[in-house]
Image (cartoon, rainbow, N blue to C red; front, side, top):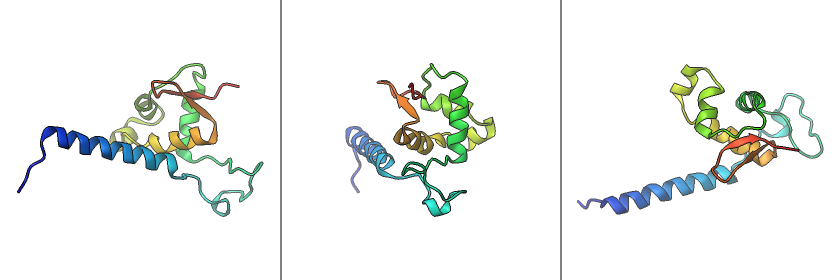
Length: 116
């Protein structure tokens, strides 16, 4: 039985993270138009937001000029029990909001509401 060295294990871990980031960028988190509440498309885009996206938007609206780290958004946008159960709950919703053009990211990867 062979063992991975620390360097190989770190490379495998980094590969897994980059693969996950790639999948988050390419996946669509939007339900089909037929599954939305109204079933209508506005200007060719589905503007209906999920509950998680609405919670994030509500939290960021409290300080629209400020950037927040993903972890801080995940921790402060919901109740403590929700965050403790799944600290990564906000990642798909944040990726979706960025793709929809509602949020922007700075060079550090922090998020804020898109400035006009």
